[in-house]
Amino acid sequence: MRWIKQYWWAWGIGLIITFLVGLTVRDPHYQTFGLYLNIKQWLKLLLGGLYTLSSRLLDSTMIFSPLVVVIFAGLIIAVRVLWKQRRIPTLIPLVTLLAINTLFYGAFQFVVNRERVWQPIDNCRYPITPDNHIRIIYYPVERQLEYGEQQFFLMSYNGGLTWEQVFDTYAIEPSLSCNQHLQPLGDGEMILQFERRVDGKWENERVIYYTQDAGITWQRIEGQQHD
Image (cartoon, rainbow, N blue to C red; front, side):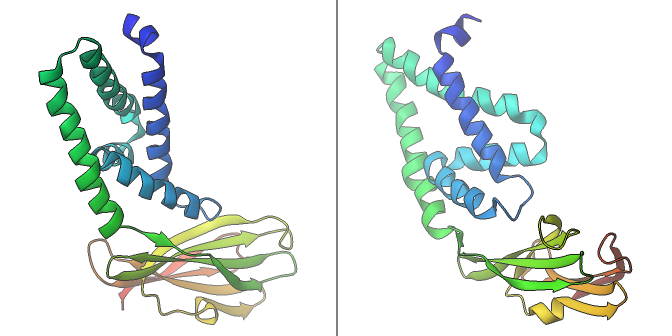
């Protein structure tokens, strides 16, 4: 308890860093995608390998949140205590290791594996009925030797006043246009198809959904098709 009171500021910094890392591993949302991706890039630069470790822990389960807070706060407290006690022979290797982590691993990730997100493309909308509209937002994402799109599929049930995200997907070099995503059949029926990257592979799968109640419910009607 004494360590918490004495170094409350270090625990606060650890909590803030953990919160920011947690934001970057959340499921993508069309309103925050660009912001969270930029936060992720700066955390990669500043934290280096510690970002990789903490993001994997939090991505597996948020139960690890207290552990991540302890890791970051513990490092800050360790440096502070070693400095106050003038334990220079121990402090120098620790600070050197942290500096190498940021200057080399962090900078490498920031420059080589940087993800750049461009302004969203929001020009694909279709009224299934006068009240029920579907809308697609595309976020172009550029990675090293890779171009892709983070796509969000939204539904409005009040004529476009408010929107609800129903699907999201990431595709490598997507080939479907707005008209190919949406195939209206009339009387509230529509087929929606999109591409989704296959985990660990340089290819997309085709995912197809069908609605017969103007987008209130969606049913997957076809299995995976690889492009």
